[in-house]
Length: 404
Image (tube, rainbow, N blue to C red; front, side, top):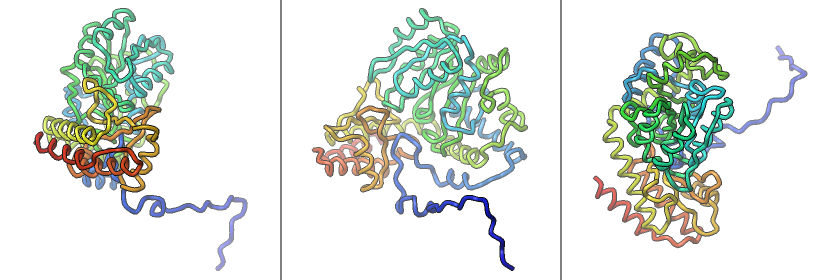
């Protein structure tokens, strides 16, 4: 029997398969994210289950319990977001900021400005506290800005991945904000589980993170934690957020009541569960030490090779390392050459003359450090930048041994 040919439809496009598109040898992901994921996380991401069943309910309960440990909070008000870290950022902001809310936004890079833009789009009364290039916000300027502007809410990025600046004074900043009755919203996308962040002890009101960086999970599933004070603000508000998917009251239905909000990213939640479980098995103290040891050793190796780090040490982020591009070579050229010839992928930046190497989660393993530094050195050598590869590799090795 002959099959009839349907008419009136455009022809189907001819598409290359993923096996034809993806590189034959997987790239080592050593940029600013996403990061390599452990095999247990990858395996968890293969499964699909009922997003409202008893199994999922148990998994969600454990995700929240483990998240409390990672955020270092006793607050139960932890919600997942089907979206990137920026979606978690927008959930925190959209549920605490509305028209005419007075918001002080500490800005020292691309992502801190993104938080300010989100507040501005909601019609908030936004005051931007800009920091000098390559520096963290100074405590006295911060306090003066609060006393002058009298904000209801303050946004701060703990680690600015765009330019690798670290707001090291975050505990003191949050404390000063709390003394003056301000809610604080903190972006910890690249810092959570890579360095200390104590939500309760530092009196922070909302912390956001993405799965694909410090947590070593997949992109597209994120977390936001609200303090009791922030959650009370959510519950007692007299306005409805414009963002339906990001309404924390609606998200509570799924994350705390086992009922429907929208179809959860089941596979991603399972991956996040395994990533959090591995963090709990390692322990935060050991994890912080591993990240600091690996990052500092890699920084030493880069400098010994003859390359210059972008940010002064007092304001330098450890979880993403910024390296000044030498001479007239663009960061695009360096990244492309390194990826094509040495199968290691690092990141450029947002208009800055730097390349960035991530030190988050699975990136902080000795074998990855050696491979990355060697690839960077060989790339620079091939592009006719004078570097001392043996010296850099030797310094990396001795630094790792010295920190062991």
